[in-house]
Image 1 (cartoon, rainbow, N blue to C red):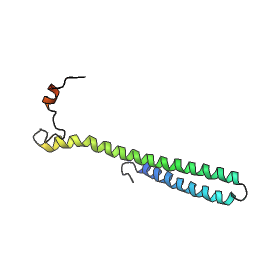
Image 2 (cartoon, rainbow, N blue to C red):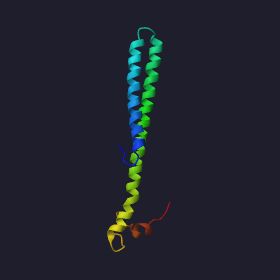
Image 3 (cartoon, one colour):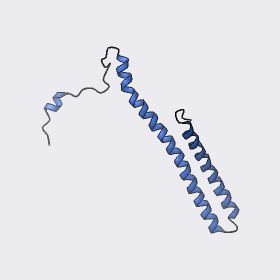
Image 4 (cartoon, rainbow, N blue to C red):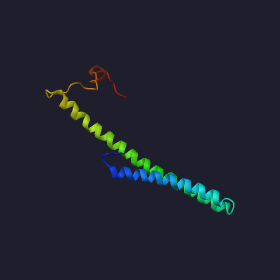
Length: 110
């Protein structure tokens, strides 16, 4: 459960559970109607499974949005920690090494 968005997290869980219930109901309905009307039973099974897959996918998309939000938050806090952690106002170390000017000087172009 996401502590920043508890209601959206609860909705995601409810949608996921509802998708599973719909899939189970579609299979049970198919088994009950199989002997009476095969065409109707197949339509109910396929339609129910498609609806269940869509609902489960929507719940997963909410989870992906949570992951993107958390990753974005961590990425935006990283530079602030680097600057704040130095103490003297200077950056501690650059994780990206500087480019060599020799390779640029010898570049002839296309």
